[in-house]
Image 1 (tube, helix red, strand yellow):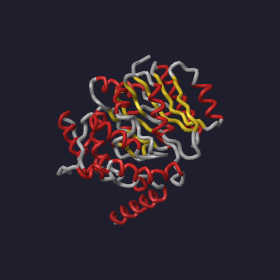
Image 2 (cartoon, helix red, strand yellow):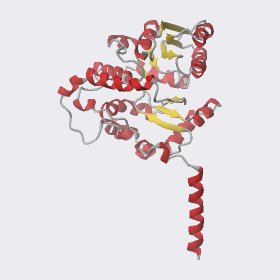
Image 3 (cartoon, helix red, strand yellow):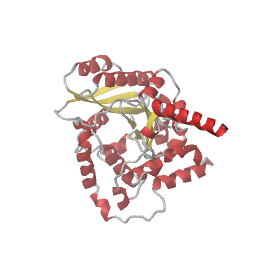
Image 4 (tube, one colour):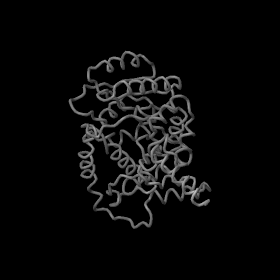
Amino acid sequence: MTTFSVLTPLDFGRRPHSLFERVRKLAIALHEADIQLVIGHAARGGPFDDRLHHELGGMRNVRIASEPAGLNASNLSRLRNNAAALADGDIILLLDADIFPDIPLFRALAAQVRENRPMVVAPCLYLSSEGTARIEKGEDKAFFIESALAFQPDWVLHWAIPSSVIALPRADYHAIGGFCEEYEGYGYEDFDFMLRLAFEKGVLQADASLLFDRPYRAPLLSQGFRAALGQLCMSTLMDDLIAIHLFHEKDQDEDYYRSRTDNGELFRNRFAWLSSQESGKRSMPPVLTAFYEECARRDEDPLRYQALFDGRPRYLLKRRPYASRLWRQFRRHASRAFAR
């Protein structure tokens, strides 16, 4: 067995069939690569919980840390901590079951940690349903990266920089106490974990500006803690060490997503101490400074990544058949009028 372990939380309370198929494919890919998979499982007593133990529990590279699920959305922090307790690898790689099983990427992230990097964060490219169907038919990952950088909206939805695809030493995971289990459902538990780890390892300095909490559309125009953590992705971005997130539907009315508001408040309370720290005066957000510095270090043309400055909503990018037809008609009539 290789000396790193992949950890993923799993709860079949939502879209069980899709999640089971994805974790099964992940387990098979990791088995063939001789990499350990440890699953933090919220057991609800359903058929897919039984299938998980029956079909994956017997695989020599898989360990399942099951605990009874409550009535509400699962506690992803506790599921990850349960998995970490069973991991053998001296390096652990955190990811969700919806991440495409990219074995070369997983090995490269672990190798960077082994080169004495305290934490390695991969950018993540979220595919559309069309893009997901295409990669599952065998399309190379490079196609989607180049499509995203070329402003093509058909195959991709958005970037996550930073993402929750993180590689780190297992000892450091336990040294900071793992994930905070006060978070319930979806959101902010990964930001909490990354900030504590970055402070512990001296990767980031405490700064009042980190409390600024605003989601972004353009990754290189992010601010606050997202910009601070995003700078950790610049080298992996330019090495094309990019994770692929497979498409799934979201229902913002579910308790799973509504908990994000409560988690955001908990996050602000837990890091309220940052308000007493001096706020450094910067002409640019740290992610932007790190981007240009990394480009200079590699002699890379920044224009290759100009799509990461694009903050337009997705509905403005998608071609709509009716609007496209009207535009073609307008151009045809205009060209005729000009010819006359």
